[in-house]
Image (cartoon, rainbow, N blue to C red; front, side, top):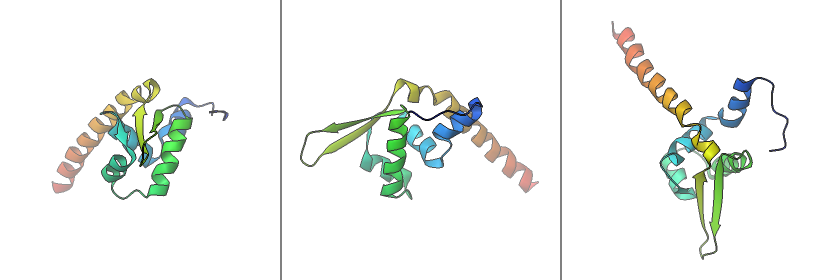
Length: 111
């Protein structure tokens, strides 16, 4: 990644994973290596073009590795790098916050 990074560390993080799809791709890859089709199926409404773009961007940023096997048809697998795995605590915090929000928000709306 040859881009100049923002001075603010929060902005750097958002630049790398601020897209909805990137966070969900990381979520899926935290459990292990996945093929393109597995990711697309798991993400549901993402288009092939958007998934490809996000995967390329994440590879360029050093968050994942793309491995192409010389087979017919070609097989491509995506795996998080150590840097990508280092985002797990952030996603764990997001999961916890989101679960608490769902419980507390709907609890407050019903009363």
